[in-house]
Amino acid sequence: MKSDMKSKMTDSALFENIKTIYRQISHAAMGAGREPGDVKLIAITKTVDARRIKEAIDWGLRIFGESRVQEAKVKIEEFSRLSTIDYRLPTISWHLVGHLQKNKAKTAVQLFDLIHSLDSIELAEELDKHAERAGKFQRVLIQVKLSEEETKHGVPKEGLADLIEVVAEMKNLKIEGLMTIPPFFDDPEMAKPYFRELRELRDNAVKSGYELPELSMGMTHDFEIAIEEGATMVRIGTAIFGERK
Ligand SMILES: *Cc1c(COP(=O)(O)O)cnc(C)c1O
Image 1 (cartoon, helix red, strand yellow):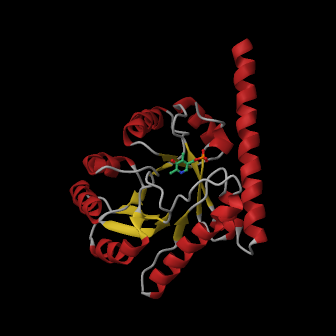
Image 2 (tube, rainbow, N blue to C red):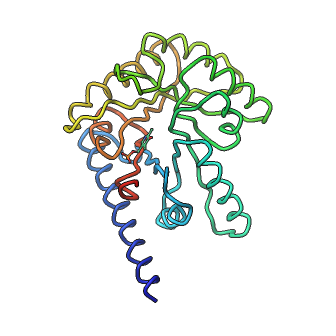
Image 3 (cartoon, rainbow, N blue to C red):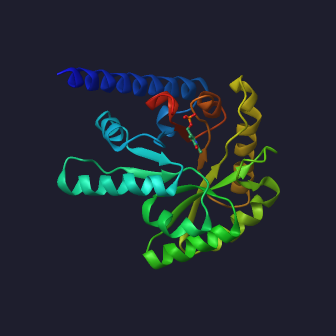
């Protein structure tokens, strides 16, 4: 009885969080003269267990992002088992948002609809090879490093044009846009120039003839600013599922 009560409370907190986020997304989009429907919510589920993800699905979320291949594999396999026994489970989409090592490229191709973190020609070659073997067209975003922080992955902006050119030629990869993670600032307005720069890099690539509709930028702390600058995918974990341990 007690545990029933508890899970109901958790449920509705999750629902409230999701409603709040959607309201904030709509507000930010409309404030920038954009359509709220043009911003996709990617619910980031690192450290979140399968039971809570299932609750989030019940509340209508459909796209989930993980940052580690190994952790994602366990959850995604659990969900494929669930879908075979529960016909009501809707189709959900899994994205990889964290750094990808070449030796995990094969598993990543098996698991993810969209990989946000392509950042080198070597990794692209590896993904292309495994996508071909799997008979899959792998959708990717190129992660761009716009700050000097040591820990951030991504291709430096000077190398972006070359990487786009090479990946666009690969038969089994499809680049759909760019992704970035700005440094953390207490004041999220400070991240604005980074989001703007990513959009400008995308616009330049479009002028050179590439089709790159997606801009994956903005997390719990700064997604509204990212939307003002054109984000089409916001990656939100904490504001949906609470603080990670
Ligand atoms: C964890 C993570 C997020 C979500 O961060 P929150 O601050 O919890 O919203 C988004 N993008 C990437 C790449 C992440 O690793």
